[in-house]
Amino acid sequence: MARTLTAITGFGLLAAAALAFLPARQADAAAMMASTPKTAGDPVAGAQVFERCAMCHTADKGAGNRVGPNLFGVVGRKAGTVPNFPYSTALKESGITWTDDKLKEWVAGPQKMLPGTRMMFSGLSDQKQIDDLIAYLNSKK
Ligand code: HEC
Image 1 (cartoon, rainbow, N blue to C red):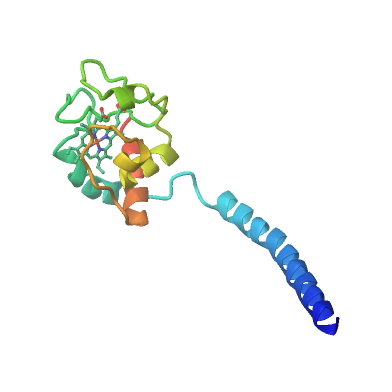
Image 2: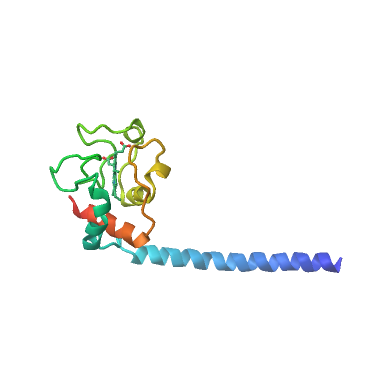
């Protein structure tokens, strides 16, 4: 009986601690989001990261398609809409609009985000490189 009581009290304490902890964490997260600019990356450093994309993509206006479509103005664009580019059905029908967040997910692992895509790229894992790259793409408009 005593043991059960201890167990129950113990659980109660844990739950109380968890409850006290949660709102604090949420407040932290909210503060972080408020103070972090939409794109924290450095576009100049991002241009270097883009070297890894450049064998398949151009990002300048009117520069044309390579193995991959031209990426000028890609931020905010609907996926699969560059004229005359032979997209995969998967990308064309994905319904994706290329926001910063979607682009981050994409460059981290296109095949994981969209099985069936023709973009053969293993993905970036360095968060700073990803942020810089997205800042660079944002500058191309
Ligand atoms: C080996 C070639 C290759 C590399 C390297 C590559 N891509 Fe791609 N990319 C493609 C191809 C091919 C497609 C079209 C995919 C499809 O149709 O499924 C594509 C599609 C895209 C799209 C979708 C564009 C649209 O119009 O919807 C984005 C965004 C993109 N790539 C960004 C990048 C970025 C950023 C990098 C560098 C981190 C990169 N790609 C590296 C070949 C490549």
